Image (cartoon, rainbow, N blue to C red; front, side):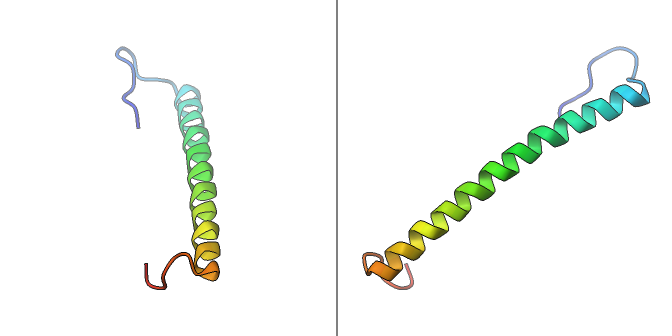
Amino acid sequence: MRPLPLGDPPRLSEQEALFQEEARREGAIARSLTTKINRMRRIAKDLLLSGELPEGS
């Protein structure tokens, strides 16, 4: 979480907007990470099935 700017504390609506923006960014990062992990799993599975990657690697 990034620090709030100096000065008066944000009003509730501003605070909510900051939270929503942060959640949007983190959601995009989480989706990207999940997509990459799933792709790596598919690659590993294909390598295991082809015999190119030894079992237990």
